[in-house]
Length: 198
Figure (spheres, helix red, strand yellow):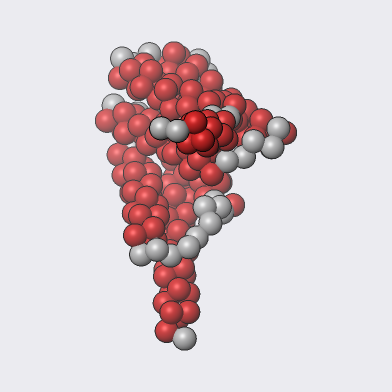
C-alpha cells in the first residue's frame, strides 16, 4: 500500500471514528451485558445498564449536533443499536413471561419487516432517505418506556398496575408504525416504477 493510499485510508477513518459513533458502539457493547442480567433475573442491574444505554442514545445525538459530527455510518449504527437493545429486551422478557408474548412478536415482526424493506429497496437499487417518521419515533419511545417500566417493578412496585394499558398502547403504535413503513416502501417502489416507465 502506497503512502497516498494510507493517507486516504486515515482520512476516511477520521471521518468514521467520531465521538458519537464511539458512544453508539458502547451502546452495542452494553447489549450482551444487559441480556446476561435479564436472563439471570437481576432486573435492577439490567435497569441500570438500560438507563446508561438510554443516556448514551441521547448523548451521541447531542454531540453529533453540537460538534457537527453527523456521519452516514452513525445514521445507520444509531437505529441498529436501538433495535438490538429493544429486540433482545422484548425477546428475553417475553421468554420469561414478564411481557406478553404477543407484544414481543409484534415488536420483532415490525423490526424484521423494516429490515426486509431496506434490503429490498437496496437490492432493487431504489433511492431512499433513512429518516424515521414521528410515528416511528413515538413507537420506539413507547417500547423504551415499556421495557423501563417492566424493569422498574422491583424498585417501584406501584408501576406494575400500569403495565396492561401500556402493553396495549405500545402494541397499537407498533402495528401502526409497521403499516406506515409498508406504505412507505410501496410508495418508493411505485414512484420509481412510474419514473422508469416514462
